[in-house]
Image (tube, rainbow, N blue to C red; front, side, top):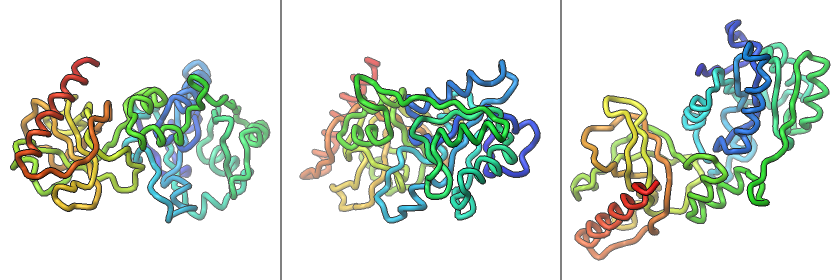
Length: 312
């Protein structure tokens, strides 16, 4: 998959795509429905399958003081879209220039002239253009005059509940990763580079891969059974593990991070990129009377996580 960070000056073979368009935070089953419709509209496979999205998320621009809300960063979103067979990812810079375009200007300058799209698929609740004044139906009308087709995908519901990033955030905040996964169609994942920590886990016999969670909506803090994918480096592959998401109250540290212990793994992961999938919530964060009690609990956590993950 190729990633393009602008709509101008694209190579000829990146133009003419059938695209799904939206923010795709979480890349959930509703998003997958939109992408599948774009896949089906590729002129019998002649057009590449593309996704048009925005970086940063528009909400980060218009509400910069709001609490972190994103389910995934740009890296995780790109990783997921690549797995879905997307050939061209147009990650458009959401800045003053783009956000200031009217719906008609966006459709003409970005979609028609810039990307040269052949087909656009959006969800029924899609809004675009300055002030979010353009609707999905407006886009369909504009497409008719500009030479590209538009499909409006209905919103998806599961058991009477609309699949949405908001509903997924709520499930994760309540420590229900399996409920979130039912709407996502995959485990909720945090992707990123392994950074240096204070190496306490190594001293306790449980070396962990530390990752930043800055800017992300956090699931309920605590310990999880996880599926970990090492994406880069000589140890690339899939592993079972247990992860602690939180502020480490035992050591008085207040900046949240993600620490993952990979089962049956040896090696150095610093600088490599991991994708951590949240499977089950095991327990909340706790402060122990001493290191011995902490180690005993970590052993129990790992035993429970192995049982859960081995049954998948």
